[in-house]
Length: 467
Ligand SMILES: Cc1ncc(COP(=O)(O)O)c(C=O)c1O
Image (cartoon, rainbow, N blue to C red; front, top):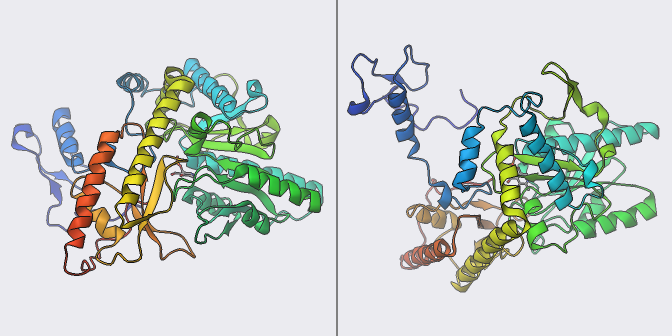
């Protein structure tokens, strides 16, 4: 049994895949078992075609408005990636130039996030933000444990303080590292962590407050500076000195270009570490992420392993050992190819498109915007209360007829009766595509409005594509 959902075709009488006649070569064993390793080999072209033909059933990634992850890169980047698919990122002695590019990326990103001494930046690439979050959380825990132990205080009940909108990566970090996750609830008009709510949950066992830039649910930025100011006040009153980790999975590569005056990064002294996904608005195909510590002292040395069996001394702080080097190469390509102006142009275009879409949706009259796409180029909307003929799940299903993949889901606890659609606008989603989507949404609404009563409840129309 695989960990993912049961095979769609489990239970059919077809235990074998079929091969199209023109690819079935004489002498080859024809039936290809679905869930068992075939006994014999087959021709590479046949195997290619079988796999290729099956994958055409996947949706088109460019029409996938659920994902934050890059779905278009320059052909030149694709060539570089193809040329480096054989590079293992961990073999830093064998591939010193790939390692050098990773180091340059760390410096560039630390500088982008205003690290005070970017020339001494401490950080690493990861598989994505989830691994970066695991590492960031681990470092916060070790630092807190050392502080508590030095003060002769208990170290058995650490907690993170976050908003309930926090991405599942933090729930995993909490569960895997045995740390309590203290979540501030959502309320009408407050869809993410605020300074007041954060401070209410902090105590001497808080290893860090996690501020998200921006929220997975609606694309809004959490107020990092305000949270920091509130924690300064708390420190003045109680002596508690609580660090902030910024989960900039998406915003870490948006805010520096579009909101340069927003203080969310290492300009705020309490921000000790930041993660971002290179494969989201860093514009690289999956999977690459980054985590940077403000200062080498924020990364306890006992978490760094030194191995010598690849030749030379190689420090590593990662959950994986082997992982692909090509994504790091592609990140470096993007950084030098685009620079500040390129990233700004691309993300501004995405933000403009997101706001154009949200305005268009707002103007239709059936929807209530929860955000506008003016922070991350991401926004969500719900149905107005008087809309009775359809649900967001019906709308998502109707849009799928045209190929659009839009996520529909309910908000977390306390707002679980609010059902939304969220649209993530990325590089490669043009204004023209936005206009076509608006036309398709309007056509769907008019179809539903033309029904004599509410759509019958279809159990297939349930939360979908939610990340
Ligand atoms: C705020 C936030 N943190 C963490 C993650 C996990 O990132 P990754 O998919 O790069 O592991 C996501 C993914 O959407 C996210 O939005």
